[in-house]
Length: 372
Image (cartoon, rainbow, N blue to C red; front, side, top):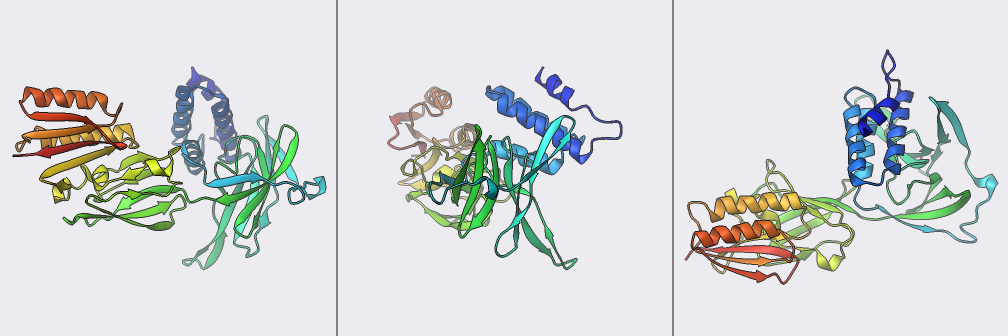
């Protein structure tokens, strides 16, 4: 029903959709997404946007950007309202928004403004990927050496935190912060935004040697290198408090394991080398062995599908393989991988393998294997 409803909005012209018609289609998808309350409906709309890309009902770049905005985990900005006198708003100081209409949809856009070094252009619009209403965007000036020219690229949405379902416009850069206006419920207020370091992924060194160290490169959501971490056997490392979704990868051909970091205090997310390397570099012999035991860890903050895949890999290759253990110790985190652990215990019992099941003392489930 939802597909038919949205499809009725997106009737294609005989000669294919124009850029303006694509903007209308994306706008209507976005309006439907904002009004949806059920996760299943929102997921259907996300799929509709992706399905609209191949036949050009939605521009490929804009459609992909829109879905990425919807899937964003954490805000990249700390935003606070500015009060008198810095937050004083006069009607004469507000930027002008021009309006044009396409297929009954009113689109707004602002005049562009430049920062002091003239390397970034700011604009406001509701015709681009966004969160609803008018959002603010930036376009950096990029030099193309091949043609010896500077060109504007983008525009890119400033993301959740600055942009909301209300109308944001008039963004200005002031030193390391941004100021902008937000119009909601007939009132215009001024805000200040400070960038946060939000980690997007942490990648292992691709050498995959047999050393006991794992080297991690930490990148933020802008693909900038924040720093590097080293995981040593038996050493816990705590990641920064603003970490979002983390993807750990070892070897270029291995699928990453994803850890969910949103809404978790910094003290609760500590990752051991085994949490990351459980099934990624086992062929290189770098899985941890402590006190004669081979240890595999599964953080409770790991994406469930990722954890289940790693768990099955460990069971199939280390528990029921040719060199099956004679003793298994399971330290289970309450409510974590419950069905998988129950099945494993039954399997071990049926094979007369000694097994002890304990309650984990931290935020991970651990499997320790020993062959006497």
